[in-house]
Length: 628
Image (cartoon, rainbow, N blue to C red):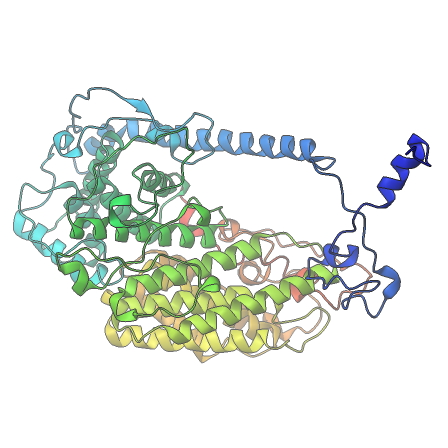
C-alpha cells in the first residue's frame, strides 16, 4: 500500500513518534531521581510548567564528545610532563647517593651491586600517567636477595636488636605489616628500614651519631629498592614512608610514596592472587601481565603481602587528604581481602577474610573476630579518601549545587557514624589512630558548612558534629597521654589532632571568645609532647602558638572589620592560602568585598574576606618545606 505521506513528511512523523526520556529536564539538571510521572513528575509539582520530557536522542556520541576527549588527553599529557619532571629530579638525587654517604659522618660506602639479569622489560607504556614510572620502567626479574650487599653501616648487633624491639613495641601496633620473627645478622634490607624509623624512639647512648646513621641506612634502602624488586624491598620502602610523613622533609622526598604505590601495582599487590581464592586481576584479555614475583609460598607470607598493601593504601589516602593530590591507588583497581586477625596470621592454614568493600556499600562484618584491627584502619582511611574526593569537586556558587553538596556531606557523615558504631573496642595506639582519623574525617566534612554567610549563628547539624568530634579528639589526646606518647603517637594521629585544633581555633575566633579554650590548649600541649618523637608535630605547634600569641595581643578586641589581621591568624583563617605558603608569609591578605547578591546559601568561607576557600584547609604545614 502506498504511503499517504511524502518522504519528508514520513521522516518528520517518525521523528515526532520517538520515545520520550524517562527523566525530565529539571530532574536531570539537578541530578535527582525522577518518578517519570506524566505530565508532571512529583519533583516538579510546585512548578508544572518546567516539567518537560525531551525526546530520546539517537544512539551515538553526543555533540562535543570529541572536543572533551581531546581536552582530557591534553590534561593527561600535562600530568605526565609534570611527573617526568619530578622523577627526573628524584633520579638525579638517587644518582648522587654515594656522595651523600661520603658526606654524612665521613662514611664512604659502596653502592649495592645488582646481580646480572637474564633480561629486562618495560612494565608499562611510556605514556602511562602514573608517578614513579620512570624509576620502575625497566626492572630485572631476578630475586632481590641476590642483589643485596650489606654495606656494614649499622651499629653493633645488640643495638640493632634493641631498635628492632622498639619497632615491635611502638610502631608495629599501628603499622602491623611484619610478623614477629627472630632476625639475625647479616641484616636484611627490612632491618635497615626499621633502624631508620625507630631511631627517633631510641635514647641509647651507644648511638653517637643518629643523623649520620639514619642518612646512611636510608640511602642504602633507597638504592636497593631502585635496583631490585621484591616484597622485602617494598616493605622497607613502606617503613621509610612512615618515617617520611612524620619528619620535616621536602617535596622531593615524597617521591618515596610515588615509588611505593607504583611498586604495589607492579608487584600485583592491588588484587588478590588467583591461588588465594579471589577473582583474578582485571587486565585486558589480549594482554598478559608479566609476573614480577612468584606467588606466596605459604599463608603467612600471603597475609604479610596483604597487610603491606593496606598500609600503602592508608598512606596514599592520608597523603592525598593532607596535600590535595589525586589518589595513586584508585578505588576501582582494588580487589583485596581485609587483613585477618593476628591469631589467624600466626597459624599455618589459609584463610579467606571478606573482600574489601566501601563502607557505603556494605553492612556490618559477619565475623569481626576474624579481622585484624588494621581492617578498621583501612576502612577509616577509605572514608577519609571519600571525604577528600567530595571536597575536591569544584562547586559553582549556585544554591542547588550547594544544597546537593550538603546532602552528600550529611549522607557520608551518617554512613561514617554507622560504621564507627560497629567498630569493636580496640585498645592501644591502633584504636587511637582509627578513632582519630574518623573524627578528623567528620571535621573535614562538616566544618565547611558549620557557619553560614552573613550570620553569626552556627548551622546545625554541621556545627554540632564539629563540636562533638573536636571534643572527642581532645579526649583521645588525653588517652594517648595516659598510654604514653612514645607508644601512642603516630603521624596519622598527629594530623588528626591538628585538624581538631584548627577547628577549635576558628570556631572560637568567629564566636569572639577571649581565647581558644581548654580543649585547644590540651591538644596543643599534646602536639608539643609528640614532637619529641615525630617532628611533624613541631610544625603544627609553631603555627598554632604563633596564632595564639597574636590573639592574646588583643587583635580580636577590635570589632571593626579589619582586612589586616596579623599574619599568624591569617595562617588559620585565610583559607585561600595553601598550607605550604602558611609559614613565613609577611604580606597581609588583601581585602575583598563580597558581591552584592543573595549569599545566604553559601558558607561563611565563600564570602568573608579573611576566610577564603576551605579546600586546602587541612594540608600539611608549609614549614615542612621551608628549607628546601
